[in-house]
Image (tube, rainbow, N blue to C red; front, side, top):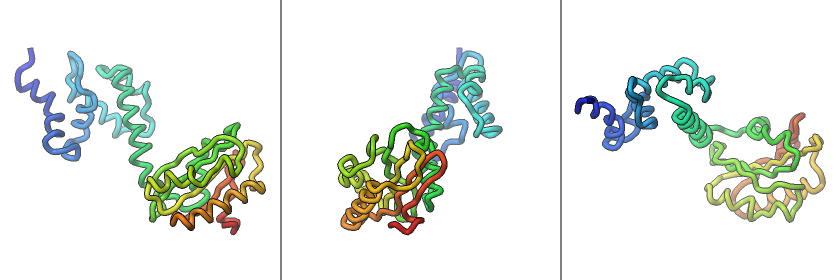
Length: 219
């Protein structure tokens, strides 16, 4: 049977978080709160310290399989940790990323370069060019009816963005803009001026590279 002190030891990270906030907790204590409990031969604090050691040794190469090998963790809790890491990457780390060139846009959207359908996307940016969010606006051949300014700027307004970058992929691999691409760009640029949200660039991406309206002097 566990003593009162031992039981308190297990609950302490959660109690500490409630009283002082997450920033007051050490790394292993935060992990203990995330896990909730340990196993018969390994309490949650010991288990948490082992996982944090893995973080420190090789965080970038951490996988679900690697975590699942830790005695006392198991696939369900390992999945919780991997999910927490991925959420952090998507919503926290990304907030500090600056988009300062078409090259950085291409890097951000590279996964769309090999799509078989055309994806039209917007990147909303703050005044210091930090990425706020990336969104898919439409899927299908680019035209004025499919890409309506209302759909493009609604999220930018919600994000309180200072500027936006639009982008779409060409499944054909053709990196140059079509007449319709140019017409849509011009229309959105004019609307952006009215809205007070600058259209910073329109980037066409393919698996071979990209075309930037801004870099080519077309904006």
